[in-house]
Length: 396
Image (cartoon, rainbow, N blue to C red; front, side, top):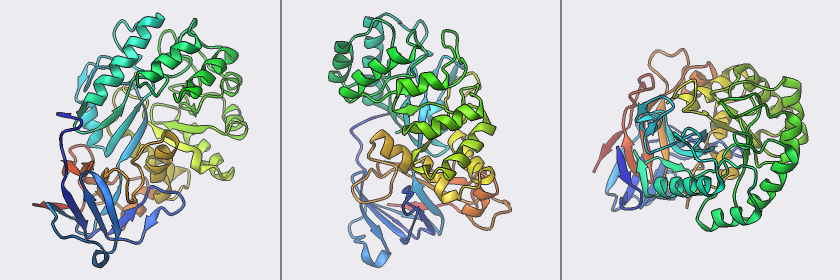
């Protein structure tokens, strides 16, 4: 369901009886708190009930001992026109992802737009239009940061300045257009960075017609801010090359659902050995040839926790606080002043895990009982996850 981006206000919301509070912050992934207070979409208090001012609340959420985490962030999507994807001919994929706990999405380029313009005037116009459209209208409340032009040969510094002045803050995946050489990409990445535009580079084999192999040497030379789908989208580089990227580049390491699962697991283990888990972020790379993955981010969390031996509370940070910090977002971490974007979860019914974290560590998906964006409840029991053992209730 489409909703206006700026007109709705949450009022004062008190979230109480939280059984487990995941912060999204690697430095302290679990908080000693059972209450969150929100005012007009912002967190104003986190702590114990006795220490939080609940007076005047217009909405009270009773968690009944369930888990609250920051809303999940999908660092790599390819939106086109609202909540429709021509790549799969599917409606409401953003809404379905929200039912999977995703409250924020980052475009890696509107590359599936039918007849996507590749001339410089046209690609800038498409980027600005996408940025405006998704800023003006949120689908099911999800914050889609769109308008990510795929750079082409012939672009000059003034093009990046013009894009930035128009509000564009992202580049689409480098390598999906005609710019594929490391030196050429590096110059454009530098121009983008100069004007506050963040860059992502395609990593691995070709994904769509017109794309090509982007190998480790190109990735290192281009020095984009995000090593996009380091585990391939779909086809990965050899693992030795992935290790070299992790070791030689200081940039963000993006793992995606629409990639090589084995390499994702090995990369997470290697990042842990290198003590650089703060660089790991998660995306789906959907909609793509493998379809739409509404539970893709949750599945990545469970996969990395269960098979890469990453504590579940840490794996959730990959999908929340890590991405928020790297992408410079005001969500993703539960602390005062941040956007009140939350996912309310409990262990799935009949999981072997005795707690939510244990169930995720065993590889099971949690059940989502509610999703909140800017303090407003966007869905209650998810239609996509397995049913949660316990769900929150709402009173006004």
